Length: 223
Image (tube, rainbow, N blue to C red; front, side, top):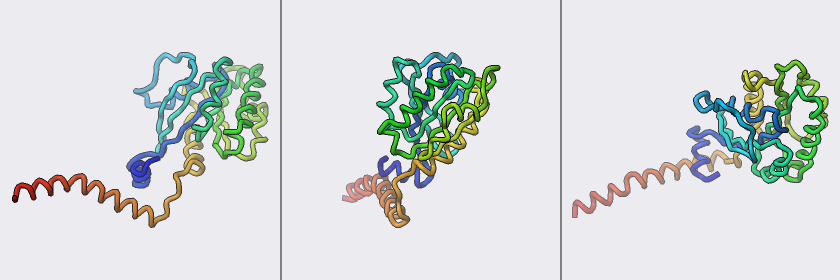
């Protein structure tokens, strides 16, 4: 993040941006969830399976999220690890009605958590136990047990039951992600002295840009 971006965030002129990886098996509802989180005028009417990955954006009250929506199809899952270093938070979506593939979801989650680019980072993980409206869906508590989430000791995590089509449960998840990201995805600390120091030169810089050409012009006119 550049100096001007830091100052913009510091002064409240710009929201802090968080890079989020959206992961999970195919047909779990990842793209539908991300689409529902976007402003209504930016939502797509037809949701198609993601090929490779797509980049989407949505905002909360204090953060701007850039989401890498990764395809969950088997042939594309090897792409996930290439974006782990970029991720500052993870959304992991599970189809709570598909108990047969829950084992596969757990395997992918274990692989994710043991990857060198993730293992030693305190990166927040938001789980959506999606499709809770379906008859065969299990509770978020059961999904947590099946995925053995209680074994995650070194990362903040939270699980929400959700219905992506209706948007139910999504706001709870975003609220948690926002609060956790503000604590774990921090700007490089700026001491108060340096904050005022940067602010002074920020104002001086724009003063020079705005008024220096005019000063030269008037001096030239007097001659």
